Amino acid sequence: MPFEEYRRIIEENFGEPGNFQAVPSDRQEFDSACIWGYLDGDYPPWLQTEIGQVLPDDLVDQYTQLETTMLNGDYYNIYEPYFAPLKAELEARGYDLVDRSDLFFY
Image (cartoon, rainbow, N blue to C red; front, side, top):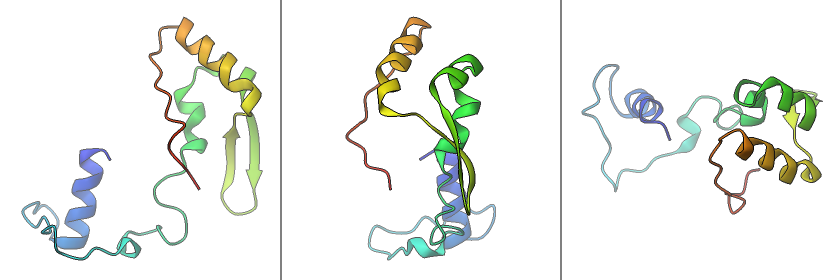
């Protein structure tokens, strides 16, 4: 988690704005429902909506499909057959990629 995001959550839930001294103890209970948007699925941000801001435009056009949901708008989908060619293209452009297929996203 980016430090500034952690700071924001701590200040909003355990302290007062501008006071980062209110870090909770390890024994203090934390309920993720107190983070705005968490229970609605709006937090953390859906990274698939941001692919167009991360990948070069030509690769977005070549390897992604813009999909639409009923509630959350548009997102970029990269179908599995495109994983290897996209990875190869990014590495050829100097990107250093790390395989994190062990992470599970809902």
